[in-house]
Length: 338
Image 1: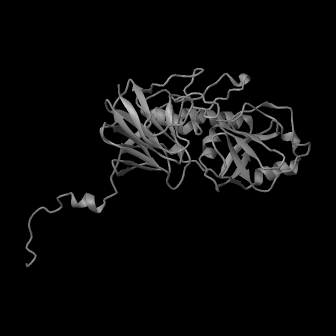
Image 2: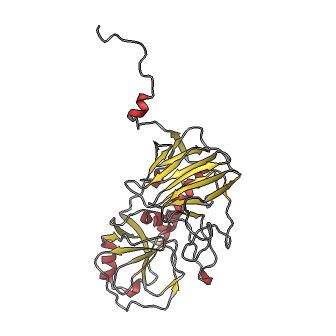
Image 3: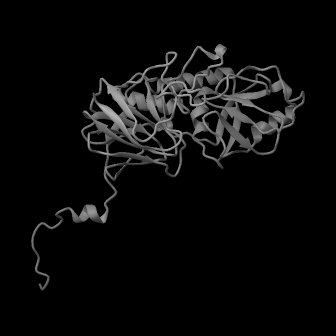
């Protein structure tokens, strides 16, 4: 069977599908991609259903090979550095990975998460209906763990991709992280109006101690009007808790199922990836929208993926000296004495 070979993987590289839904009442959260739009884009470009299992790449990077046959790859890692056998490629690219070739993804100038989808299906057993990896509980993926060197990922129904690499045209991934849309609540009444205004005004700085569970924000602490404890209730991805220290915590893909701090607002679904891509030290601000605006944004996001992802040939620009010396650039013989 065709398979991907993980030759190297940094911390935080996992398998993620659309998430493990329907088990929140049992204390099991969905996991799934940190950037759902980017994950869906990679799958759409690979010709898969949008929630198909893909490799989520962290800033730790990943190196992949293939065995048993060629497999099409759709790589969506904006801001990362990508190379195939040492030749630089765009950070959103469709290609065919053949046995003996090496695909390398490394952190670059921007971005925190990216996705590698295969044309076919990464054949790992689902747990509770999903292959999404939740490392804290040891569910999904490969025995509930992140990927490491030596892992073999069988690819069922593998299809080759482009004969030559093509850049994926995906302008909807060019998102401004400085303005994150939120819907206030459900416990915004625990904060006076001036504190709501301060929350929206920001700016907030993303702490480097965040992970797949939560995004921690630094800035001027908010003051609670009715205390910082509530009866624990369920939390959604994007819920923004404000604990006793007054510094907001945005709950992300690997969040806990319930929480006992008041939630001042919730990041709307289409902006979850926008926030997830901000590295530690990055500055953000929040913008309040209505539920109706949030629903419209979600519909618009889905609409962009109804059609195939356009692609264009890669034009090589990395003309190194070794590459140029390997070419015959002289059409005839010249006498230097003339």
